[in-house]
Image 1 (cartoon, rainbow, N blue to C red):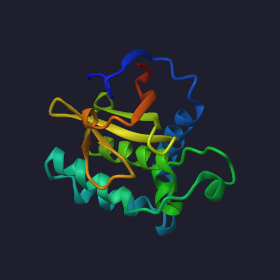
Image 2: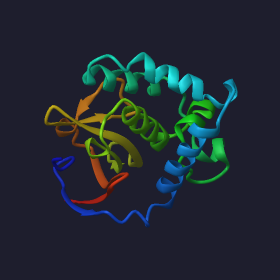
Image 3: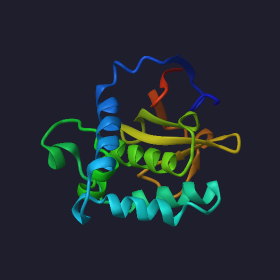
Length: 180
């Protein structure tokens, strides 16, 4: 995959520095195996995945972005009574969430639809327009890095965004430190 937002990237496969990410992955795997009943939202999750399974990859990306962006934004202190919590997609469907929760849910939905983890990265960045930290999902599709952002309804090519300065990006295979 190409670099994101025109930065230099230093890669590492060691995810030990990211316990919240590793924990969200583990919890989601457990939830999918053990969660039953309508309250847990596994049926809703699976129904959505099945509803877009047979459309083009481009339409899957659009549908996942649209579906997750329809959820209300709720900060972690309000939702979870802690400064920073990385929710699983089923928790997100139950309680809504903040920027990384949208990104995680989009990542997991596309993974469930057959996207490889090396085609996706959650990017933690600084939004210099709003002067706040933010997280988005970047998907590499058709030779382009596409941004799925809870603040934007459509899919946007990463090279068209100039107010995002990434700190790091991550997937299940590793992480990338972004410089410049």
